[in-house]
Length: 407
Image (cartoon, rainbow, N blue to C red):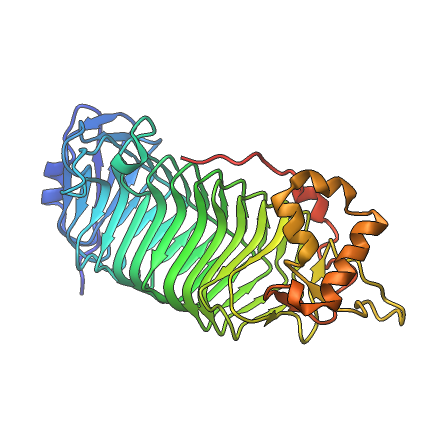
């Protein structure tokens, strides 16, 4: 019969590390409110719990807490002041290889180089933490908020991360869930590559240089996220296959979607509103299903680089706010195709002041001439029967959401 777990109490003026060393596997160490200096090493499965938010400070040397055991829980602490070595990857909490099933929740990780570094640790849960980096540092000198490398089964849920290099940096990490995180004032909200079968859901990424950046991946579900006010892209899809990108809001970024070398993806039900460029599409991105999306108020709906026309909306159509066709049979879909990047669009790109004349009959006649004489056109995105009305009836709430900003 296993012995009953003990609860140890550490009070201000006492040291935490000797208690960690004496405790047995499964014990609980409760740290009372106060300030505790030093670097902690957890080498056995146990719970380190803060009572009334105690502070543990590494004095800007090394890792504040380093874990070398399975089944460790760290909760309710203020963890701060790691060292500054990018080479040593100094972190507020460093989960070393083999620290499986760690649970890090309800902590404040502030003024650390990396918030959490997680390497070769399976089924880790990082939940409802506040992570703020060294905001006065240049972006290249900061660490990341949460760094995942070579993991499976991670659950990164409900964290608030800002003023780091990349809020979530994910590499070679599979079967994970990223849900309900707020990621802002960093280089990328998410910098993510070489990872498969993951779910991105209900995250907010804003005021970064780039929002969600998903690269060299497959089998992703990217659902119900909001990417807005980023100075480059809202959602980047680069070298991505076999994925579903649905019901996201991408608003007021320099580029809403940046789609590069993407195949066999299904983009559906997204709201792309008030971006400088709604979608930048390049590098042979083809064989994708793009249905039921709303493109509203983007200065340039699609910036397309390709050798032949790309058809979107063949099944159900997308809504394009600048569509000038008609619906004579009243079926809710336009009678003539929508063509992005036609002659009038290119004229407006070169001479923005011409936008004032878009409703003029002469300009509409020029657009018609461009459609009638193919020699005057370039390859484009074509929507055969576009939707006349948007799916997102509340789209105006996102129009002018925030000025672009980034670090």
